[in-house]
Amino acid sequence: DPTVFDTRFLRKIDNLGEGHFGKVELCQYDPHGDGRGELVAVKSLKPNSKGQLPCHLRREIDTMRELYHHNIVKYKGVCSEEGGRTTKLIMEYLPAGSLKDYLPKRKHQTDLKRLLNYALQICQGMDYLGSQRFIHRDLAARNVLVENESTVKIADFGLTKSMKEDKSYYTVKEDTESPVFWYAPECLVGSKFYPASDVWSFGVTLYELMTYCESSSSPEPLLSPSEGKMTLTRLVEFLIDGKRLPCPPRCPDTVRELRERCFCWLDQSKST
Ligand SMILES: Nc1n[nH]c2ccc(-c3ccc(NS(=O)(=O)c4cccc(Cl)c4)cc3)cc12
Image 1 (cartoon, rainbow, N blue to C red):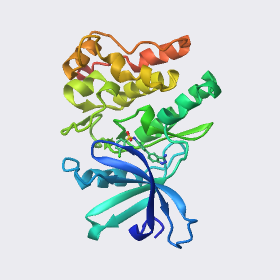
Image 2 (image 1 turned 45 degrees about the vertical axis):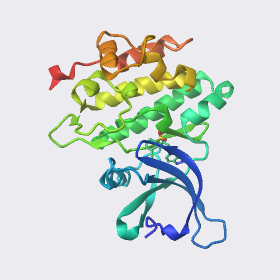
Image 3 (image 1 turned 120 degrees about the vertical axis):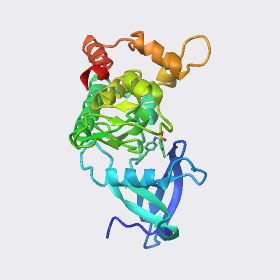
Image 4 (image 1 turned 180 degrees about the horizontal axis):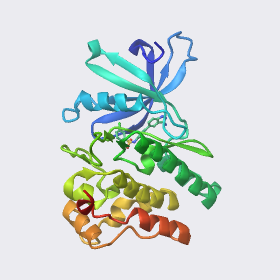
């Protein structure tokens, strides 16, 4: 079975990223031991991840193995250790990394047309995800990978949820590691996630694209009030008052209008 990877032949090469409970590593899978094995990205739980149960990674694996789209990072398989107690998710490796790694370094070679092409591909990947009744819940530039100058792929399905047949939303019980600055008000207030909640996160990701993911323009500091730390309460008040991320400099009107439509907070309580 080509989707079963033997831990004996996985060799760690570098770190690719980490969350509160998990990490993503660049590894070489070299079953022939000739140093010519393929490079893969491996997601696993951190040893101290008491809060994030293996079932969360299991759910992510079950989600990824159902997804097949040009703009979604490919699932390759799993690697189990210790009699199945620890499982690792094996994915295709994209050397250019995420938009957050790539754009700041390629600002002068990336014109508006290419940024909007990336935005279009994110939409195509998210439209497919929605057609499979999934809500991503962590769409952000750090979770969009660059395959080449004309192709990007959505990654990291660790917070992705599947809507039940008879439901148009998902109510989250545990709100571990929530990326609150990418969340719509209904997610922050009622822990309810709709497909429209991913549209809001796309609006924030579009903002990141238009600012070339420069850390000086990152959504976190900008949404924080000048006085003191932004608390969840202050963020909710800020958004419910109709305040939004500032429009990026030199943002075309068409993108500005698209942004506003993404941040149009449909009061979901009226529509359910
Ligand atoms: N360069 C790559 N090729 N294939 C990949 C698969 C996933 C990733 C990846 C995807 C997402 C992140 N984002 S992240 O913020 O580092 C992250 C958030 C939550 C949980 C984890 Cl373990 C990591 C970091 C790395 C990178 C590559």
